[in-house]
Structures are given as structure tokens and as C-alpha cells.
Length: 173
Image (cartoon, rainbow, N blue to C red; front, top):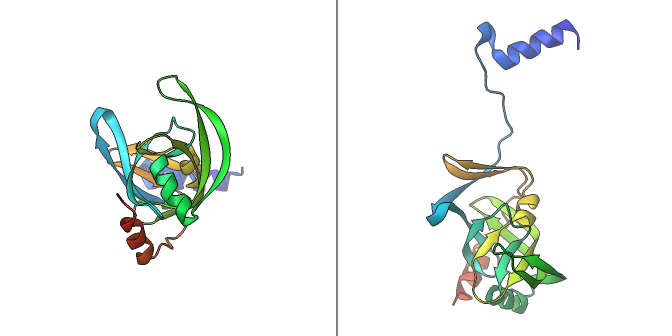
């Protein structure tokens, strides 16, 4: 790198007079998180066909998760497709065979839509988890504690229509 480029980089990074300057970072999609008991964080989302849900943010989970009840609703609407079966290791160390399905569309926050997100299906009525299969679809992400939020770099524009939300709410128990 020649001297001119080095000096220019020094001015960009430290400003005139050596004062640090913040570099411009491409904006991301900010999704607020809510901290709940035992230091767990949730984001509000929407699973098209189900309605509004709270996703537990779990970067230690390889997959998003849904429960059998949600799967049955999505299957009836043709909004999921089977991907594979796998043996998963749960947080308590127990191994369980689960099915993985591809969800058509989920939304995180107000303006982040993700398509074709794989989700493992757990028995009973369990909480929904935002795991790495969803976070990977969102591209690079930042998990921030102060304020609690996710910043996602690769979201699609929202295409969910109001009638999709109404239909989803009508399917809730």
C-alpha cells in the first residue's frame, strides 16, 4: 500500500487530529428482544399460517423448532414440506428422533422475512425456537444485550399480507 493510501486510511479511521471516527456500517434489520426469566431472550415473530409467536433465541440450537400442533396446522394449509428425520441431542443430553420440515415463511420483528427455513418438530406443545437454521437465513447477525436486540444483515422485504395474518390468527387455539 503506498503512502497516500495509508495516510487516507489513517484519516478515515482516526479523523483529523487523531480523534477516533466511527466507520459506516451497512444498516441491518433490528429485531428487538425481550429478556425473560433465567436470562433467556425472545423475539416476536410470525409463522405464516400459525400467527404471532415468541421465538426463544437459541444460538446453541442447530435448528428452529416448532411443535406438533403447529406442524398439523401448517400441513393442513400446505405450508411445510418434509426434509428429513434426524437424531437430535436435547439440552439435557437426551437423544430424540425428530422430523425436520421446511417452513414457507417466517417473519422476525416488523421487517425481516425469511423463506424456506428448516425447523425440527418436537412433541407436544413446546415453545418455538429461533436457532441457527433461521439465523443462517438472516445472514450475519449481531446479538446485543444493551439494548437487547438482534441485528440481521440479510432479510427479505416483507410480503405477508394482512389477510395472511387474519387467517393465521383464526387458526390459533
